[in-house]
Length: 120
Image (cartoon, rainbow, N blue to C red; front, side, top):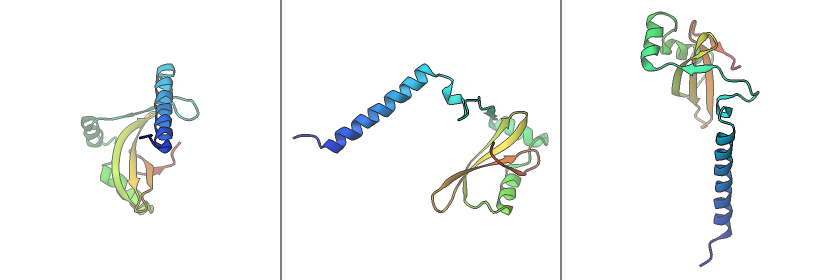
């Protein structure tokens, strides 16, 4: 029995995507760590112990305060992920929200004062 043409096309497209990913990771190993403009993204996220230490040392506001700040400014949705990261020389919360419509958005909050930031 012949295989339907749609399956063959989907299979070939899948191979094409996989081969292009393999090529880009083999030839351009630093490409994944770069932003759209080609400049390296200077963001490293803290582990749980580092996060607790930053909040205890008052270098970062608690996560609840960052979420409250976003809610006060009209950000609605379910928070599905929160990371405390360094961006340059400052700490920021990178929060991922899921709206009722299914749209996933990302918000950045300055961890020092809890104020929302515009993504740069």
